[in-house]
Image (cartoon, rainbow, N blue to C red):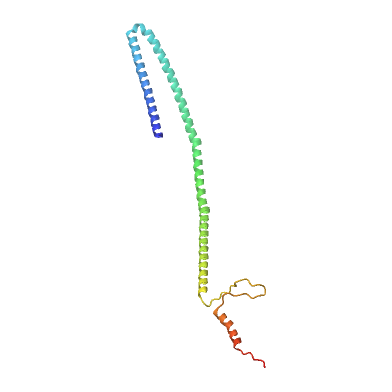
Length: 204
């Protein structure tokens, strides 16, 4: 839609320009024809129109002289303005451009200095810290894995002892052991057998 509106606007402007040029051309043709008609009339009546032609000629010479003076003044003012513009460019704009270039170079050097002495060390320290954190995490994972392997081997071996109390004993009572080794169980059963093998003497 916007392209169509722009196309319509450009077409309207071109039609207006064409009409203006046509009107100007018609005006020039009419003026030329009028001048030719006046010249023919004056030439046909040269004796009677000679004094009027002289007056018109003098007026045209005066108008042309005034136009020449005006054009000369305009050209002089234009040259003065051009000289002032050249002076302004050479004395004010050029130092401003030089100062701007120096400022840009200073900013560029500052940015390079900061990137070399601040950004790169911070990035290196950050990467080193991340590497240490990764190593610490890996070490923690390996430690946990080793602990799980040790627990699995302790559970799988028959001679392992687990002396975790089943419940919290009361005051003055020995702790009750849930799991005991086979040697400890055999040692506890042996005195009971010896006591049972003794004969109690009967009283007479």
